[in-house]
Length: 196
Image (cartoon, rainbow, N blue to C red; front, side, top):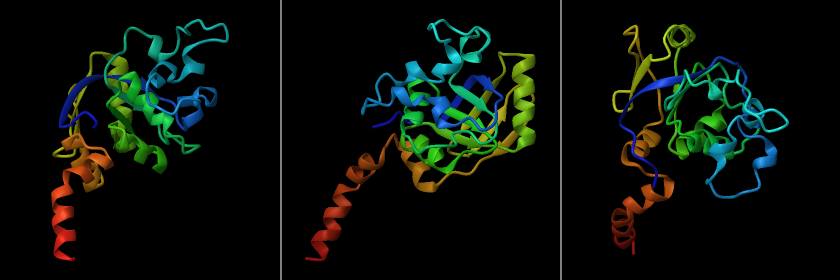
């Protein structure tokens, strides 16, 4: 089971860097585990900490001005390898939504499979959102999955976003792929019985 997602209003953490790849999201040396637990601790590890393990004060996740369960990222977020651990790290850190103007397909699918909603917006909307957050870190967005809208609550600007209907249903219901199959067990058994 994953946490159900319907509507979320949250402040945002801005990461206006383009082409963030999965090795930057979760460095390869942290990929030894096969369960999701603990990956959030190592999200953007090489940007958050120096070689001695001290926090890098200039990195946004270490800046107390910014918080929230929405990561606003630059274009082409999640490129590189297909490691699912990148989605585990993003979700494990506490992000429910990542907003960008473009996602690598594999990251996008991995995120959806793990309860993290990737929201694709126009470059104009993304820039306006970055500007709003920089001007006021208390800026919030509202993401409405049912209506597939995102609203910049500081400016009132709104955009529609696309999502695979099956994945939308899974997020709204709190299902991963296995949960979805189990939820249809009676229908599957009925279908099989009718064909015996």
